[in-house]
Image 1 (cartoon, helix red, strand yellow):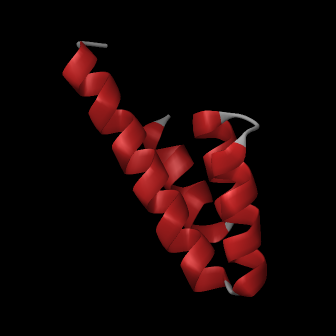
Image 2: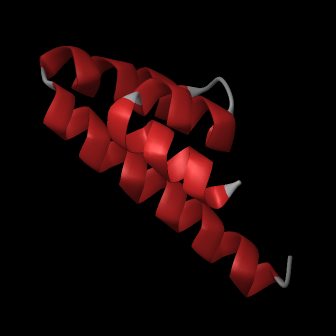
Length: 61
């Protein structure tokens, strides 16, 4: 599942963020960044997905 979210974060940034964080401020920020350009949206999406997985691994999930 992580690989799918990372690939979606790279090619369709808002979808990857939505699958990771759901609807919220993070998704809104990613949509704005993606509208400003594909690269900023993708960088933000990869960062959000990586930080989410890091938080889960620290909690023991």
